[in-house]
Length: 251
Image (cartoon, rainbow, N blue to C red):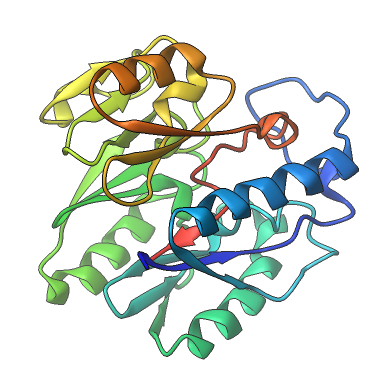
């Protein structure tokens, strides 16, 4: 068993979710629910115990649970999303993490922080500074994580929603990065990719890496390097700027 994964069922209002850097296209709710079930199945098959956060059907973006909490060791930092419409999502996630026995802390006004901007690699925590996460939110997170021995590095974002929309880490500590969206020089060992879906992956134990079906070239590259790509189709969530990292919180 790898650990616990926290997920949340898609809202019936998913199609109303926020889009920022792409054009809105129709979302197939039934297909999205099937894709979400397959995503959860991929985690279960890889040895993760899945817990469901309370549904938030009035919150269109609530399936993107990663943005509402940052878990570091036994501490769950409940976020204050930069999109005001998303702040109602946090209460149900607070219940879920408390039921898991985690300590909790909160990002306070005027700070904003979304979990999609937080990339933890060992004892280093990269935090994207963009439209959803501000400087005060980064300062608060730095203060909360310092007692856990974490170093927070702020990363200015270009034309991209979240940090992990542009860069994530592989199990070997190297970084998959979509050039032009974040300063590559802030990361120690970069593997540039050309597919957007190839820049966001989730290590799920051993050499297994969760990756979107929209990045077949990157999946092939990872396979050639000795990783095991676990491919999931998340097309309906990608229409809302979602990626494989957004749909779960793993600890």
